[in-house]
Amino acid sequence: MKQIMILAIRSLWHRRIPTVLTIISISMSVALFVGVDKIREATRDAFGGAISKVDLIVGPRTGTISLLLFSVFHVGSPTHNITLKALEFAAAQPEVAWVVPFSLGDGFHGASVVGTTPEFFEHYKYRDGTSMVYSLGHVFSGDSEAVIGSDVAEKQHLALGDKMVLSHGHTEDGDGFEKHEDHPFTVTGVLAVTGTPIDKSVFVTLGGLGEIHREIGADTPHADDHHEDSGHDDPQHEGEHHEQGSFREENGKLIATSVSGFFLGAKNRMDSLNLQRTLNTWDGDALLAILPGMAMGELWKNLSIFETAMSLISFCVVVAGMLGLFVSLYILSGQRQREMTVLRAVGAGPVTIFTMLAGEAVCLVIGGIGVGTGVMYGGLYLLRPWIEKKFSISFPISGVSRSDIMFAAILLGVGCVAGVLASFNSYRAAMREGLATRF
Image (tube, rainbow, N blue to C red; front, side, top):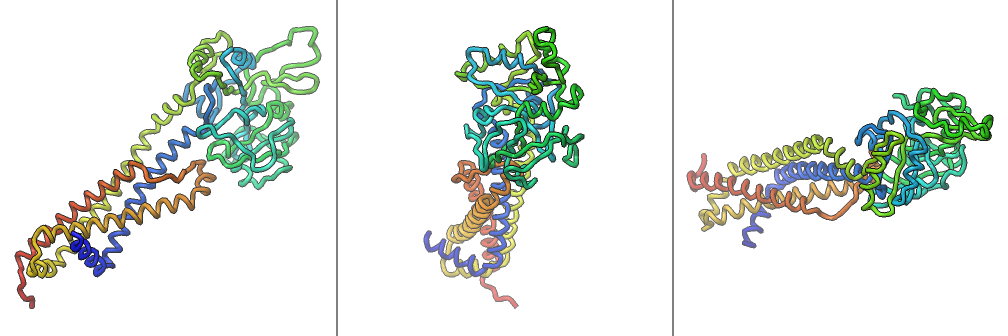
């Protein structure tokens, strides 16, 4: 067997140009298949890893996917706000460990602006509990300070101490509908790359959002028809504060009275379902509390058609590569009739010939798998930083997976079959023509 494999390798080297072309064809198919599979896994992990260690996401009663999209991925917007009484009600539950509010609606050159509290950076995790870290600066401490994601800092060329002007909403040119030039923000912190929507976000205080809407009043996108008039009819507070959209002014400072929603952490994750039921059936605001993990699963289920399409495309490419291998071996077998005849003349039996040609096919497949896998993993390693910044998708470089091994085994099996069929064609032609001299 060893001698037969040596003979097969030498035969391939003698025909090195078609051998190299065949290996390149197989490697391209393998690289595309492995690449699509890794992209599919990375995309799924990016969706699932966008939020972690948050037990419930609570917002206005809309829909599970809608709430998940605007709260985590900043896609879309809430139909209305919820009052701070809902947040206070949730925080008062004995099973709750922490509550972090968030308010959406403004933008900065295409990036989403999130109004929240400093506790957001402490409790909000991503990708299996990873905490956010600062590449520069620190968390905001005033209503004129902002923390920005890595993508915002890079694209807008912002550094610590730079001023930035937010705007209403999002438009195609990224400038929003109306700029809040009367209240610029100073960058105090730049977050490190996370590979999540955090990279494309700007974070300010809830009071900071109130200040930029001071002159706009109830016509802002944050305005909520269901806000509470807490203390408004109390003579003791008369003249000290008044309602303005989603904010209340007290002693010259705007305080939020409603938010887009809040993230919630339970003391015991087993209590999440009870908390979800309590919040969803509260008699106050019409709330919707969702479990992030279950919502992610539902979202990915709706996107499964794209996953199936990607897998189908990669499968078709591999089939085309294997057909190319078979055609290449079959054509070459027609040109090797003389070689097969000589081997028969020196005593090589059918098994020897079949084994040699099948060995050649296996060598071609192994070479294609090795080159294709190496090119794909090498490309992912080199392009990973750019992919994470551009598409917010993380590609962890791990060892060969079980699916990769199964795929390689299937390709080897197909290569053996292609080699046997090609060798049968060569052997039959050799038996037919013999050692007759050609003129």
